[in-house]
Length: 355
Ligand code: ATP
Ligand code: MG
Ligand code: MG
Image: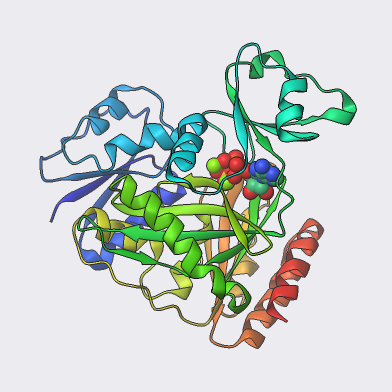
């Protein structure tokens, strides 16, 4: 069996490693600034758990391997200019946008994109970092450090945010998890609910969009497509060519998790349509100190990433899964008491969906 080297050693790399055990694959996450250059065999595989990586000896070494999967696609997706251009070329609905050039004025952006315009850094943004709102009624100008480094997007008055996680193997076979409903607060994912009967009719449309994207890139592995739902339309917000936070519920709620699915696809093992069991809810642990009582919540599994606690930082997540919604609701009411008050809105949002 080959070794699967993972560029990036955060929580996604750790969860890939966890998922590798039943496949007897050796998964080795590597920090980009590691001083040790790993000895990689030609039959080994290199995959990534981050969209951006600094230019270091290790990242150059990993990305020059014959087994580096999806080599052509990362640059395209990591730069929002190229990602949005790709979506436009494929005729996939995405928020109207334009490039912020060195001489782009706010007036021109508002004329084209409306009174509220969201600037996004071309590269490096995540968890809502790297965003800046331009409000016409406040007379905002494009800040100088945004000139030539961003794109501008029209504000989408969405009903809600949905994501689709899918996988494609080397023969072009594709499998998908059910659409996941996501709640973001200040650009950061707080909670996911899946599956959800009331959005199931959008599944075929979402699958055909992501299929088109993965096929056009000859992509191998798991990819996530974040969408806005506006009425009966899906508008792509952004793509993630890797396992994704909105797919974490699959660890508890599917017979093959997104992490195992990704490893199967990149290492040439069979992928299969994941049977989904029961109702799942995922709660992200953002900027909170660890509580051991989380581990006692019924019908749940908790993940703590072992990172330093900082406000707004993703530190872990809790998956709740049970065949019966009532049991999920009970677990949520226990967890609500254990998390800070600012989580009340999150629990209210989840409770409403499970009614
Ligand atoms: P991620 O951690 O998902 O990679 P990110 O920093 O790359 O996040 P986006 O996913 O582009 O950022 O945006 C974060 C959130 O901001 C979205 O989930 C959505 O809630 C909001 N948002 C983004 N673009 C728009 C838009 N055009 N109109 C309205 N809201 C938006
Ligand atoms: Mg992103
Ligand atoms: Mg996003």
